[in-house]
Image 1: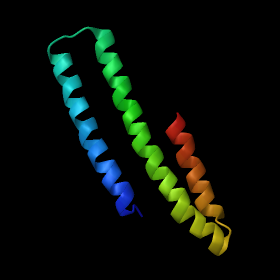
Image 2 (image 1 turned 90 degrees about the vertical axis):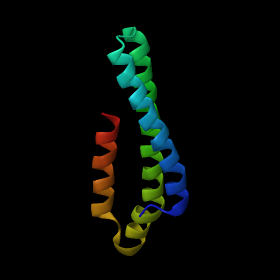
Image 3 (image 1 turned 180 degrees about the vertical axis):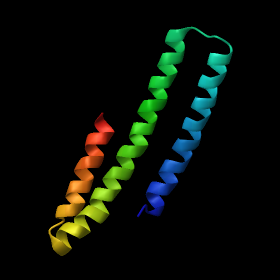
Image 4 (image 1 turned 90 degrees about the horizontal axis):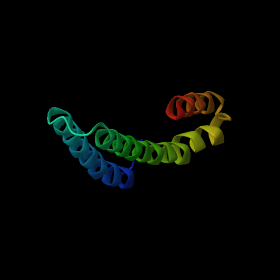
Length: 89
């Protein structure tokens, strides 16, 4: 579960990313220079990656750790690894 600290950190970042996406849409509508658009897309992707990494860190610290302590965590570790593989692709 996402705790209040992660929630307070993630929501403002996501709102900022939402603004970045709207800005990219406007850039495309105004036919801005392709490299400028790509740079903004890259910045938005990196910002989303940071949010994802923070949530993943919290998941490891809580859910995965609890699963390891209670039953070895095999299925939870497998799920985490699948998520990491998807995240880095």
